[in-house]
Image 1 (cartoon, one colour):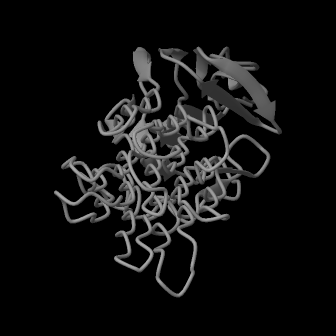
Image 2 (cartoon, helix red, strand yellow):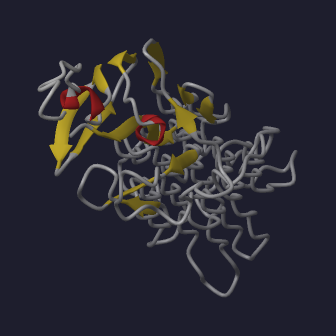
Length: 327
């Protein structure tokens, strides 16, 4: 300090304590992309956080939660009617500012719901796809998927084609099922984004066309509504899914199922795992399913001929993905 006192003992700073720490977690299938870890859950599980960052912004994770897709409709009766495609499972995504990647158009930042993790266990639910059922009964909606406070709603089932069944309407859901033709119902498409969230988790299914010929509607997708059929000859395609690179690679999910017609061409499933519609004129008694772990809606199918019933395609199961900075 000076020539008289000399050196004075002081405490040494521990600079290592000033460095930034990161989230430490287990659960699901773990991959990395640069400085980011990705946990993918294709079935129920637990996201176990054992440590969090000393920088609060690093504890806001990116996520994608996709519910199971709805089943497509089956048919009983003249093949010219046909059944609606299943709606896609609800799609919800949030991109944290500290985990850059190319998100889908449904990225909820800003305006959506952020999730800040703590050192605890987060149960993960991955919704199953709705099961197809032989006409005149309607298939099932997809099941919900969830992570923390985020729940995505299962896709709505497609309406059946049956002269005497009341199930021609598509069901409501994350995305709505397409309408089928049934004399006891209106054949309306189901409503998407049910219950409503911001940003929207899905879109409406299309109504059936009274024709002639009578044609079903496509199931809604996360990116667009189901395609309507018409007497002018348009085909009831499923609504488009949306593409996200949350895993490090672009993947489309949550496409709607195509409607099944008795014509040579049925609706195409929406990009993102939607099942194609089936005409039912070939020996195919069961519709095309949605793709596993995409939340795609099942394809509708027309009848092989009265009184032989057909079964709508099952919806694809959902997926939950969580991304965060780990170094």
